[in-house]
Image (cartoon, rainbow, N blue to C red; front, side):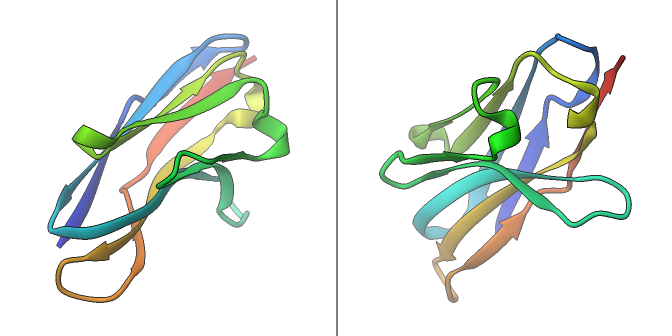
Length: 120
């Protein structure tokens, strides 16, 4: 089984910064991409940023220039550095991994979610 463990959420004031981490563990055969999504009550989960195996990065328009996704391949960990936070960034942030496990087919894995709250 593959597990994702997130950390780094919390409460911050407008303009502040937070760094989210997500560590993957388990029997992973192939790593395709990792990323971060976020969700607010009553809304669908939306992509914030992702990074592919070859290092290509993709960002939601709303976070471009403020958030940076990075990874440590040796640790199977992905990070989301969030700067210049705004109240509208308040959400539960979920780590996502597009992996092929050692035993099974390629699929999406999800972390448990971490709350980010930006106060005005």
